[in-house]
Structure formats: C-alpha cells, structure tokens
Image 1 (cartoon, rainbow, N blue to C red):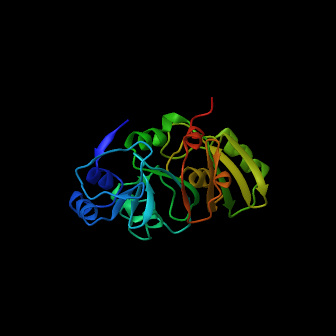
Image 2 (image 1 turned 90 degrees about the horizontal axis):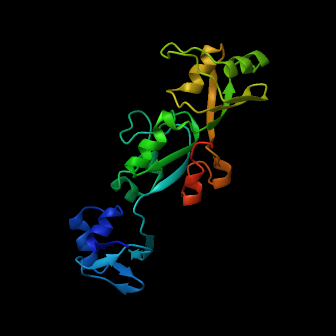
Image 3 (image 1 turned 180 degrees about the vertical axis):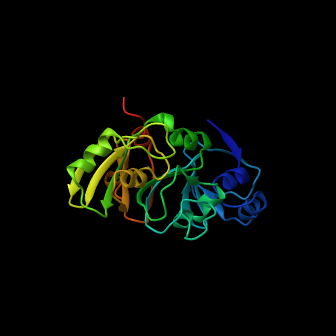
Length: 239
C-alpha cells in the first residue's frame, strides 16, 4: 500500500509540472470515485486508484510497460533527426513520464517495439546477456537459397565481432522471404548477417520477442497497448 499527495500523483502520471498539476486540482478538474478533490495536499492511496481528469478516466500506474506496433519511417529516439519519433504515436503524458524505447528498430523496420519508463526494466531487457529470442521476417533482394539458410544457421563473420554470429533458427518462407530468430541483439544484426552471407535485406519486421507475439496483442500498425504481468513474463529468456 502506498500513499502520495494528489499533486505528486498527477505529476507522476505525466500531467505536467507540480505547479500545473496543483492548478488542475484547485480548479476542480480532478475527481476520484465521482467526488471532486480540490486539495492538492490530500494523501491518496495509489493501489487500484482511478482518477477522472478533464472528464476522462485514468488508471494510476507506477510504471508503464507498453508494446507498440512500429510503422516504417519512425525513429526510435527521444530526439529524432530525420523522421518522426515513435513517441509521437503515444499519448502526450507518456513523454512527460520519459517513456523510451527498449532497444531500437531501424527507421525502416516495422514490428514489435517495447517501451517503458522503468529504468531497471529497460536495462534488463536491453542486456545482451538475457538471450531472449526475437523473431524477424526478412524480405531479401536476392532469392533465398538453401545455402543462404545454412550459412545463417552455421554462423557468419561480421567485421567488428570476435566470433561468427549464428541464427538460432532460420526458415525459408518464400522465394524472397525468410524467418530468422536471433538472441544476441547486435546492431543491425539481421541486415548485416544477410549482407555477410551475400544477400541484402530490403524489408524487415519483428513479429515476436520471447514468446510474446505481435499477432497475440492484436494491435494494428501504429497502435500500442499496455502489457499485463502475464505478457511481461513471456519476455523472459527460455527456460
């Protein structure tokens, strides 16, 4: 059980500065259980708390754990340089909460992107030591051959890696399509591995992380959703 002053609660949920949150409360814009609360110093129990702010319900969450179906031509950066940032696809409050991507997808890569404001969670999920499998659907410029699949499974040498990198699994899905599962999470790994094997990646989509699939989340391109504790558990390394 945890209690916070009402102004701190609003600030923690991304509604702006403490000063602005206090003004919202004093102006009668905040209610709980149908009762207006205009005392910003009031100590409120956060467990199970549902606020109504500007006539919209808001469920209190200590931290945010999100999955975004990332479209192409969005950058995974809080300070994008050439394309819109993925944060523009989320509610404005999430920017105030300093939500950020967990790892990165290239601007032209689509698919599942985790996002959070929980620093330890971000660090843990981004660590190469976790060995969480990530499933990608790659479109290749040249036809997918048995030799290409064999190379990716046995390992290819990248110029800045001390040892060859191998796919966990690799399956041909069409003349120019393959499904590749990696767990290392190296920079541009799928694209660089395909190039090292003599092909070129012309499109890339991440369909799953761990056992959590984008299909099971049911979110269309550009949409996002909160992750439940059960879904978060599916991001753990395989036993």
